[in-house]
Image (cartoon, rainbow, N blue to C red; front, side):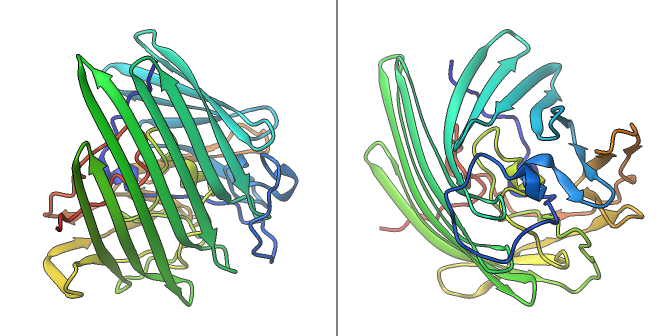
Length: 335
C-alpha cells in the first residue's frame, strides 16, 4: 500500500529543528553504522546533553523514544484521523512501518549513510507495487562546523491509474551559503519532468537578521527553504539528522529570481518565542514541547504562541509528489 502524503502545512514541510550538541571535529562523510548513540546521536532527539532535554512534540505530532533512547515512533493526528510511523535501525538502513487509522499499513526501507557527527549523507529508497513504482537518490554535504552546505535530490515516480500513466522525474541541487554561523543565502537549481513536459528553474532566498533571536541550541526554525525528506521524514532535521541550525534565527527572508534581483512582493517576516532554557517554543503557529530523557518524567511545555508571519505569496509547489524532498520550492518554467 502506497504511503499517502502527510497532510502537512507548507510550514511544517519547510522548517527544521533540534540537534544533538555532541559532535566531533572532522568533516568526512564516513560510512558509519545506523546510529552513533555513544556520541549522543541525533537519533536520540537530545538537544542538551547535560539536562537530557529532547523534543517531545511539535504541533499535532508526537515523538516517542525507545528504551534505548532513540526515536521509535511518530504519531500524527488531524481531521479525526491518526497516523503512526515506527522505525527500526539495522546497519545502514531505516525501516519505516506506517499504520493509518482506517487500517492501511505498509513498510518502506531506506538505505542511509551517516558521517561521524551522525548527520545523514545518503538517503535512498525504492518502492514498487502493482501500478506504482518510485525511486529516490539523495545526498547531503556539510561544512566543517556542521551546517548543511549542499544537497542533491533525484527521484522518479511511475504510476498507472485508471488506465492513465503518470511519469514524474525531478533532479534538484541546493546550496547553502553560511558566514559566521548565519545562513545568508539558499540557492536552488532544478529540473522536473511530468510525462512529456519538462520544466526547470533557479532562484535564491536571502535571509536577514534584524531582530535578536539567539539560537542557544542551534535549532532549525526557519519558515521557508529548508530540507524536508519525503512525506514522513520531514521531521529528520528536527532531531538533528541534517546538521545544525544558525547561531541566530532570521527575522525575514526575500526571494531572488533569475534576474538576480530581490522581489519586494515575495518577502516573509519571521517571529519566534523561546522557553526560559533557550529552547525554541513557537514558530509559524507551531508549539514545541520537550521532555527530559533522564527518566524523571518531567515534561517541559512550550510557551503560548505569539507568532506573526507575513506570507502573501502562494508558495504551493507546482507538483506535490509522494516523496518529494523539496516540495516547498516553486519551479519557474523556461524553454
